[in-house]
Amino acid sequence: MNADLAPPSASRRLCALCAVSLLLAAGPAGAQGFAGLGQAAEGFEPVRPGPFAFPRDHGAHPGFRIEWWYVTANLKDAEGTDYGIQWTLFRSALSPGGTHPDGGWATPQAYLGHAALTTREAHYTAERLARGGIGQAGVTAMPFEAHIDDWRLAGPSLRDVTLTARGERFGYELEMTAGGPFVAQGDEGYSVKAADGMASRYYSQPFYEVHGTLMLPAGTQTRGNGNGNAPPAAIREVAVTGQAWLDREWSSQPLSPGQSGWDWFSLHFDDGTRLMTFRLRDETQDDFASATWIAADGTPTPYRGDAISLTPLAASTVAGREVPTQWRLTLPERGVDIEVAALNPQSWMDLGFSYWEGPVTATGSHAGMGYLEMTGYE
Image (cartoon, rainbow, N blue to C red; front, side, top):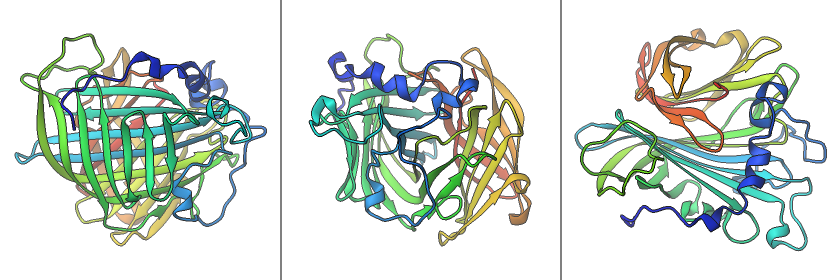
């Protein structure tokens, strides 16, 4: 990767208001679900159960209102220093219909990219906004490519990809190869999110082995999000290896209106098993919990409700708000009773819409590492 980490020009952000208006949805989160994901979706395609069709489903589903390609990775350098990275491409349909016969700017697809790099001392973030139909952003299934500006997740297939991103003071280029199958979440990929049946189509690839290079400021690192007006810094390259997790999800209304946010965990355990679990917080009724236990061979077992317990143990003051950064997770049927703690409690994504996202460690009945995302803590 080029050591020049300056972002693209501001002219690339012409569609910012369009993308944010859908993804972030004006108005209080509690009135329509977090970030508008509980808004009624009249005219968009409904989510239905059924088998996935690969490689087609690795690509875009323009008839649905919202979709994402989301990668997190836990990495170490030769000295054993821990790092985490995030890369997310969101696709939003600004109106029903999927495509437009005129193409170009008339295509009602907007894209938003988020990237982050986390150390124990610092948390760097960057954002991209683009319009589909003009070559600035898009996704193809085979060979696989998801891109926005010069950020890319691409390769001969989604099992073997290169991941790149850059921000003002950081960057990364990582090679990712899947050593296991794609995993359907929920009921064979039909992931229920609320008691009233709101749902998404959801699968993961939790078996990526990773190697590559991180780009970080040389010299002393300062705590922060990397988005300030600091003068350009010299860049050092760090060789890393580790594990990554991809989530693919699409829907038209995945949340209920009263759901104010979620706490989502993806965990790699040292014995080769994996665990995905989330809690959707609700202002009007009980919270909704779900989990998938993933065996070392990729066999998934879904759980809901009281089978899984997610309990905050300690909070940190982050960007002027209290955010739980230490948790207890239990899944008694699998003998799981663990504490999960943030590598860097100040991992706040201060972007177009704000949330907490960062690497975590797990101790207790199962040791390992993973990622935690928390939304709706305003």
